[in-house]
Image (cartoon, rainbow, N blue to C red; front, side, top):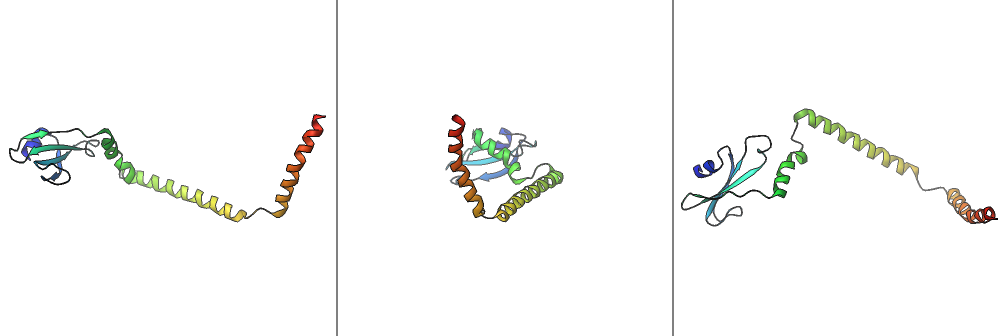
Length: 137
């Protein structure tokens, strides 16, 4: 742990993966450290420490897509901005539900088209070519 803390002095321990587990290699303890700032507190920095010698063997950077995923996590869960931001999102959600519900209500209430409307549409469609021919003369 001391070797990992020396490699990332301002990091706080998030979790440890022991040798042979899914998040570590067969020969390393992997320490995942988080930063202290708002942005870096979401990101983890893996530090691989050799299990026999306790020497830091690697401090790999996270791939860009994993960094993007970790940084966008608060947007998904809505745990940024505190209670005022959550209230605003709740009001916007309710407004969206009302718009969707009223549109669905109007669509269902409209019902099927009247038989006269279908017949009128067919007559007007049949009359349009005749009118076009008369206008061309």
